[in-house]
Each structure stands twice: as C-alpha cells, then as structure tokens.
Image 1: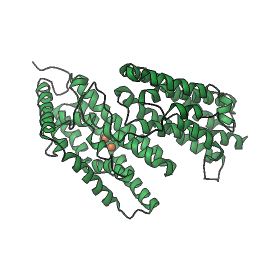
Image 2: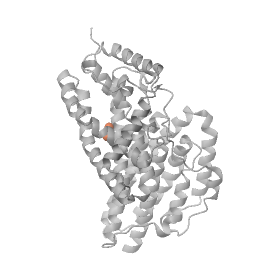
Image 3: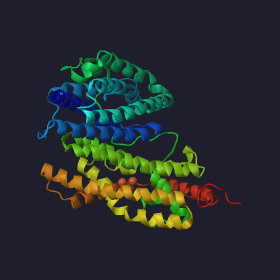
Length: 427
Ligand SMILES: [Fe+2]
Ligand SMILES: [Fe+2]
C-alpha cells in the first residue's frame, strides 16, 4: 500500500544521503588518485537517486512535506558508523565490498515486490538507481583494490575493518534493510573504528609532483600569459581544481545535516563538476605527454579553509568562482583561435558549469546566513575567504617560488615541441 511504500522509500532515502555525506567526508583525506576522481562521481549519482526518492516520497504522501528519519534513525546511525574506518582505503573497501552491495540487494528485492503498474514511477527510479549502483560497485571495487595495493601498510587494517563491517551487514537481510524496525548492534564497528574526522588538509597521491604552489601565479597572482604559456597554465590550474571538489565535499559534509535537502544534491553536483574540471586538466596534460610524476599538484586553496568556519570554506570556493569566471569564455575563444580545440572545448563546458556554481554559492551563502542569524553579509564572507587565501599565498617561501618557476619552465619547454592540438610533435 502507499503508506508502506513511502516508508520503505524514506529509509532508502536517508541511507543514500548518509553514504553521500560519508563519501564527502572521506574525499579530502583520500590520497589515491583514481579513488579521488571516482568518489565525486559516485556521490553525484547517489545524490540524483536521493532526489528521485525524495520526490517520490512527497508524491506518495501528498500534501505532507516533512520528511524526517524518525524510526529510521537507528539505521542511519548504523550506516554512519561505516564512515568510521581507520583510513581512506579501508572506507573504500568496506563501501565497495559490503555496504553498496547490501543496498543493491535491497533495491533489487524492492524492485521485485513493488507494483509495476500502480507504483510505476517507483519502478522507474529503482531501475535507474540499480543500474548506477551496479556500475558503482564494479568501479569502487577496482579503485579500492588499487588504493590498497598502493598503500600496503594500510592493507591489514583495511581488511580487518571490512571484515567487521561484513560481520554486521551479514546479519541483515534485504527485507530487514527495507523494513526491520531495528538494525543489528553497531558495537563491533564502534570498537573496530574511530569516529570520522574530515581531513582539513588535502591528501595528494605520491605518484604526482607534490608542491606548495603548482604554478607561479598561484602564489603571486598576475598576468596568466599568452599562447603556450596560457594553455599550459590552464591545464595545470584545471588539474589542481581537485581542491575545489574537496572543498565542495567539505561544505556538504559540514553543512548538509542542518540544510534543506537540495543543498546535499547541489553540493554533490558541484563536487562532481569540479572533479571533471580537474580531469580535463589531467587528461590534457597526459595527452601532451606528461607523466603523473611530471604533473604538479598543490593543495593550498583547500588548506586555506583549515581553520575557517564552514561558511568561510563555502566562501573560498565562491570567491574563486566569482573572481575568475570571466576568464572561461575568454579562453574558449583564445584557445579556439590558436587551433587548440580540445582546450577550447574544455573551457566552454567549464564555463557552463561555473555559471551554475556562482548561483549555488550565492544561493547557499545567503540561505545559511539567514538560517543561522549570522550578522555577516555574503560580501563579508567573501572577504574573509579572500584573506584566508592571501594568508596562505603569503607563506610562499623562496624555495616554493623557485619550485613553481622550475615547473613552469620545464612544462613550457616540453610544450614548445607540440602542435596546437597537442597531439603531433612539430618537426
Ligand atoms: Fe571548476
Ligand atoms: Fe566551479
């Protein structure tokens, strides 16, 4: 019946939201590159499912608008404990091997029993959610295995954690997960784990060239240059937008619990967009022949928010978006005119995303300020954010500056041998 269906969907909704938030909480502390690139995409897909679930619950209970976990709170708490892993590889392994597969079985079970005719809209969302979840499990397993192989020192702890999670989830049937009033005890997870504390400093994969500032204009903003210099600079800045994905994730982790439900959905999208921008730079640099070890990664823009309050962290992304958005359209045209169609294509899509992001930034800063009764204005937050960034840039040592200059010179030297589209070496 309708009430029972809405009750099941409500549980799935809150469990999905919890997993999105846990993934966001682990993103900054995840060093492994492929895992770092994958988590935002998984978060975004899951956030689409939460939106569909929320919409369907509201339809089934119309005109009731309130959705609260109520009796599902113990289940949400159990899922929350799955974030208390001893490290990022352990979190990934348990999610990939145990938690997501358990959810998948529950979704399939519900798909089996939900009415195909009367509850057609639910069938539709289940079908799409299941397809995403199946693909996620495959990709997460591969990323988790690779992250473990890259961190052999963490393997034993990760396996022990995954085993503890599996022991708890092994006692949960699909029907339990959908409908049982109380979950099994989470004591074993409390004993085996440690409470998730989101990293306020961004972890970077040791395969890359890790530096304090990846390009000279990151510590001393100035003219970005022209021609090859601008193309190289843009690709390096793009790959370093990994910080913006991390900051969006941190904002989701910090602010979503007390925010309207749309915030989680938009922050997950924001995070995914920024990791796509990062991948644009990464793929461009790889196409141009640079190895991971030659690609510079810094973390200062994320780290600038380490001591800030959550709204200033949101302000830091907003500050960067609002300050540099005009460059996107300009560079689409410049790169196109230079014959670098790939970079022009990237900038055009980047620009489309940034237009949405500046809307997100303004919308949510205003909403959170109003909600908390904070006396600051959006302009105050933006200024605090700017100061936080300037403080970190001011810490650039002569060695940091020399390192950034060396990186720039080395990359430009190599690029001078490439054709505008990056593919063909010039004779
Ligand atoms: Fe971006
Ligand atoms: Fe953005």
